[in-house]
Length: 620
Image (cartoon, rainbow, N blue to C red):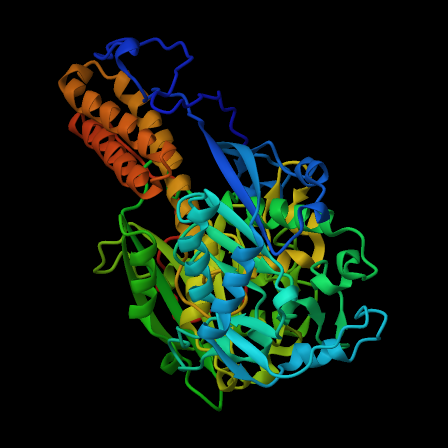
């Protein structure tokens, strides 16, 4: 259901209220509430400076008016999954942008490229560099990548840029900053890698693979992201089967500033700054709703993992580490509690699920359950899983048995042989919605002996897909308020967003969430806690005994004001932790007055626990 939200604007300290409300027995006068707005959703508005630093660029190369014409003046977040069903639901976060374009002096680039070899390992050219040399002379603008390649430690370069940006008058740790780098005047073949986190199940260092070489990095230590046009090329800029180079990100030597044939350097970089920097990394919209089972938002989230074994070559449970999942999420959202429940099962003991899986893998478009859904023709997209678990869900959840969890993320992992994946071979997983209104639902994870030998387990994929369930997007897709899906507007160049520290990328090189993820989640949850505090506060206002909790409400309002001060200072962790205290205090006040608060959970509409020991084939 689309929400009608009355916007409430935040200044640096005070949330200005514009509403009328029949207070009834409510003991606190409207004029005494600084931030809380009983019964009325809020909008948090913030001014942000975006620094764009050109390193190794002559100012004449960039048309600043053209560059700025591509940038967003403001951005209002929405819940992306709702738009799949034709619904625009604002989250309540608004940003106003001011762009600061800086051309670093020549000495800055020279110092950077003197530093880079000191944090590099010299080695042979990797596959994509060799492929690039195989392109026509015309497409390469006559350039050939020759000699050894320098494999540059990406985190070290991020730190160097952040530590040296103050010489440019920029705080690249705390302000969102993009560095566009050109090192052709100091050129040596180089790429960036991240090799600090082996896969938690297999020990494989994906970052050392030639297919994982990058042209940039960011978001590990500060709010900086860089893209080096003289590096690479990288994994996503080629079509692997034909080895053709299709990316919108082209190496600097192909442009006319070095005698090449491309004339649109400004426009290409402007689009990357907008669609990758702003839409996907710095201020992205959440993929799924951030409010889980409102109005009683969960304190303890449990990941209910069900492993379905059906491989003749390996055991899936050997390739999953629950403690790493907990560690990752405790680092990501330390104000919540997380746990993992794991059940190892045999897929053949669930014949209907086995049939649904086989149908999914075959590529057959039609559901085995007939026309039980308006999407009955979408079996290859997972409709059969949705229909099966809708009827059998509580056979696979353990949150009601010996756990303190108050929200469950159902995760279904499949350990099958290569041929069983059929047309889905290579799919690692997906986080599905409810096929109705874009509410998050189940998580599916897949693995086979081939991919296990490559280096994949289940842990990293599980963290990634549950990240989607809780609202995180990929760093290569997002929402743009003008164009809709940002990746569609940018094309293949969107994939450079994956050159950032996050488990949500497709490089598989870390199982942690980075600075950009944390900023986004803390903002999402700040507005979520604020709005559900407001909703419950409206219930309190109608209670004849509300005077008994007046001091609790005043405390919460003062704390909410402080939370928004932190938000404006970009201390988003301080903001979310304080706003959660606000929410918790308002919940306590409601419970003190014996006001019933019923959770609205998507799982609550599903069938209750069943004692069925087998899967009855549902009639069509």
